[in-house]
Amino acid sequence: MTVSMRTIDLRSDTVTRPTAAMRRAIAEAEVGDDVYGEDPSVNRLQDIAAERVGKEAALFVPTGTMANQIAIRSHTRHGDVVLATEGAHLLRYESGAAAALSGVQVKTIGSGDAPDAGELRAAIPPIDAHNAPATLLALEISHNAHGGTVPSLEVVRDLTSAARERGLATHLDGARLFNAEVATGTSVAAWASAFDTVSFCLSKGLGAPVGSLVCGTRDQVARIHRMRKMFGGGMRQAGVLAAAGIYALEHHVERLAEDHENARSLAEGLAAAGLDVVRPPQTNILLFEVGDAPAFVGAARERGVLVNAMTATRVRALTHLDVDRADVREALERLRSLVPGPRRAGSL
Ligand code: TLP
Image (cartoon, rainbow, N blue to C red; front, side, top):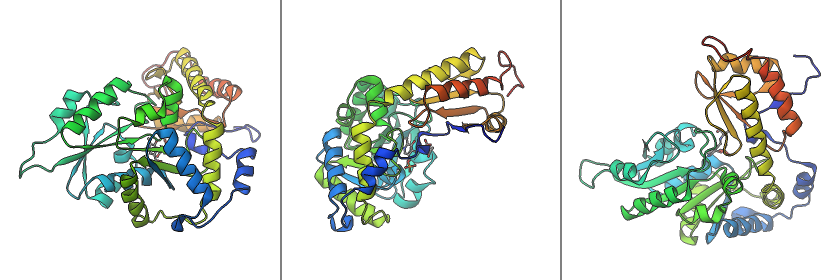
């Protein structure tokens, strides 16, 4: 890699840096002490979020992880079972928090981004002295580990109705829910209407430096607010962060379509070069199979392209605000040089 080669970072959509206009919004933010509920920018962001998601209330929290975990804590009691999808972020990438902080057991259902209602019903244990009660169903849209996939609204509604019939609460990890809105034309409020609580992140495709929101009824958000305090997430003059979030919601939603287009074009280019693309991306996440993922990631880094290994053989690349079409073309050129012709066993 030559010193002057620009690094193209496709590891995640979390790597974006605030734009100049977003930095101005941060600098000019009105602030107060949000632990007293007195930060006008935080209050405004929470109002905007609740309205966009179609819920009574919303709470600003530092991370998507905290959003999921305080939602879990608010819906469950120690010993309960949480039903989630295979590869769910709240199980796989949150450092064991559900077990450690809420004392729940997370059980995965099905092998895709959403089970069907029959699989869900079969996974709910009978209520008796031998079984831990299942009290929460958690879905993830778009589904990170499955490659940014978005199940149909019909499947999602069937699932959450089946859960509700059996007395389970429902939570949506909507870290990338705005990507789902832009990709499908189904509004975030329509997705959210199927769930009791919904979280979404400002610091993924929306390009803000920090922050997520958890939305639900006023009562539920009041319980979640207490959990935020308990988990150490009460922030003081957080309006500087909320201002970035407001800016992101106002300026960075429609443009997600460009990220989706870029992901599709990267996928097509890599597939044409002989890489085994898992599926055409629906949103901004691309997964592909290689013989040796860590070796591929290392060789890509040598060529100034950063991607992540998901498993021993699977690589993940994301498009975002800080990569444009020219960067995608350049990344493709550099990655193509790692795949001389159709992939053979033993190649990277
Ligand atoms: N995902 C990160 C990594 O942790 C894997 C990424 O680079 O994609 N829900 C979903 C679906 C997520 O993808 C993430 C972050 C979170 C929750 C947690 O958000 P943060 O990082 O703000 O705690």
